[in-house]
Length: 497
Image (cartoon, rainbow, N blue to C red; front, top):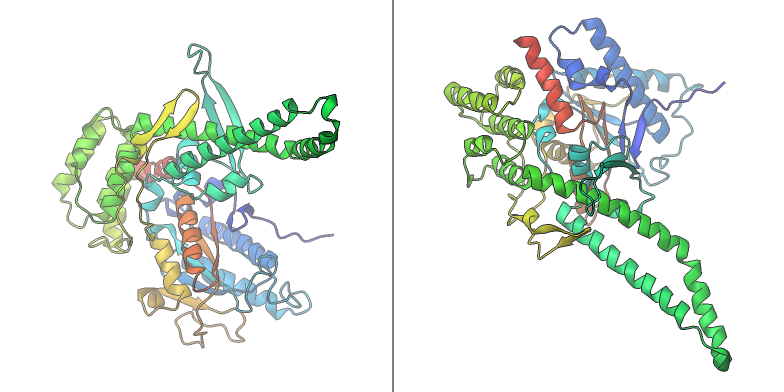
C-alpha cells in the first residue's frame, strides 16, 4: 500500500496548479459567490490545504508561512500550519523527518527554509484581465493554452476557399525554443523564429552540398575526408529534423497569434492598459476605443474598461454609467460591472489602493506589432523598435517585500506561521523570526492564477540572480485566462441583478 501525495499538477518545473477537471470547484467564482455555504467553504479550503501539503511533502521542506489577513488566504494559511504541525508532531510517521535540508528542487535549495506566500486573488483583479505581450501568456489568452497544449486553426494560404484545419501542439521544456522564449515579448519571438529558420536552411544547404560534392573515382584519396564529413552530417540529421518540426510548430503558433493581434488590434489595448496601470496620460480617449468598430471585440473593450475602473480613484457614477451604456451598445455583457462596482466599494479602494504599486516603466512600443507582417508563409519582422520596461506586478511586489524582509505594509498585513515552533503562534508577530532574506519561495494564489504573474515572477528571480540566487515557484488553485475570469465575474454580477 502506497500513500501518494500527488494531488496537484506540475505545469512547469516552477509552476503548479491544483486541478484541471472540475477546476471550477476551486475557482474565484466558487469562493466569492453570494450563496456559498460555510460547509462548502470548509470543503474547498481543506481541499486546497491537502494539495499544498502534498506540494511540500514532495519538496521535502516545511515552509515558513505568510498569508494575507481577512480572506480565504488567511484560512488556508491557518489550516496548513495546523496540518504541518500535526504531521511533525508524529515523529514516526512524519514526512519531513530524515529529509536533507537541500532536497528542494533536486538539491538546489539553500539551507534556509522556503517562504510560502499565500495571497488572495482579490489583491489584484486587474492583471487577470490585462492584455499581454509575452509568448506563453499570449498563447493562453488568445489560443487558450491548456495543460501545455495549444490548438491552432490553419487555412491554406494558396487555397483560401479550402476548409480550415486544426492542429494541436504540445509545448514543454523538451522544446528548446519554447524553453528559451516562452517568457519573451512576442516581437522578439517572431524574430527568433525567423533566425532559427535561417539557421536550419543553412544547415540543410550544407548537407546537400556535401552530398553533391562527393569526389569521383579519380579523387579517391579525398573520399575518406568527405565521407567523415557526410557521416557527421547524417548523425546530426535527427536533431535537424526535430528542429525543423519545432520551427514549423512555432511558426504556426506565431502566425495564429499575429492574425489575432492584427484583427483585434491587441497592441492598442496592451499599450493603453500599460499607460492606465502606469498612471500615464492616454493619447486616445478610452471612449473612442470602445466605440471604434475596428478595434477589438466586446470582451476586449470590457476588459480595458474594467482595468480603467479598478485603477481610477475619481470616476463618478455618471461617467461609469456612460461607459456601461457604450459597452452595451457594442454588445458587451455588462453584468460583470455590477459585481466590480460592489467589490470596489467593499474594498474601499482609494487612489487605486492595493493596486497602486504597479511599478516600472510605461510601454513605449512604437506600434511594435504593426511592423510584424505576414509575407507569404513566413513571419517577417522589419525593424521592430521594441522598448519595454518590465513592470513589477502587484503580486511580484508583495513577494519581493516579504522575501527581502522590507519594512512595509505587507509586514503588518500578512500573518506569520512557523509550523516547526513547539507552541503554535497566533500569526500576529509575537514569535521569533529569521532576519535573513529568503532565497526560496512558493507563491500561491487562492482564486485563480495566470501566466502573466508566473512570467513576471520568473523575470524578477532572474534579475535578482546577480545579487542573490533566488528561486520562486508559482502555484494557484486554477489557471484562467482573461475570458474565463471575465465569465466568472459575469456570473457573480448576474447573481446580483
